Length: 69
Image (tube, rainbow, N blue to C red; front, side):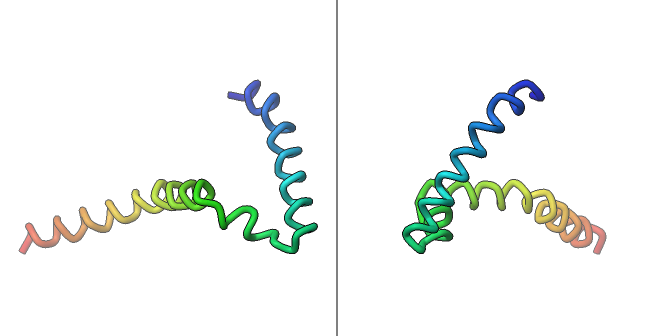
């Protein structure tokens, strides 16, 4: 994983800088990153991945309380 990060990191950074520059030229910086369907899908997937453990833990706690009553 470290070698992969070292190889792909600069490539990803140059792509990000290029996209940011294009966004600044068109006065649409946020739209460049958050307005595309693939960007929205990645954001939704990331939020789901980050929030699902908390939601599942909460649901388990509610279920356990219901069974205790």
